[in-house]
Length: 41
Image (cartoon, rainbow, N blue to C red; front, side):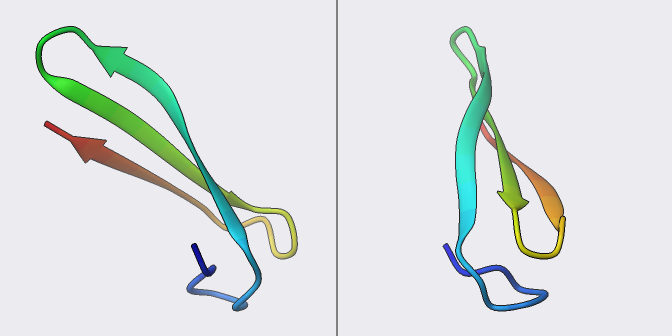
């Protein structure tokens, strides 16, 4: 995924699995320290 702030490569990782409901993802860019959290339910 491309970082929306600086355009560098951002990494997504699953940080929590909610049993029977979905996932919590966290994104981080090492270039500019941008962070985001996404929920998939």
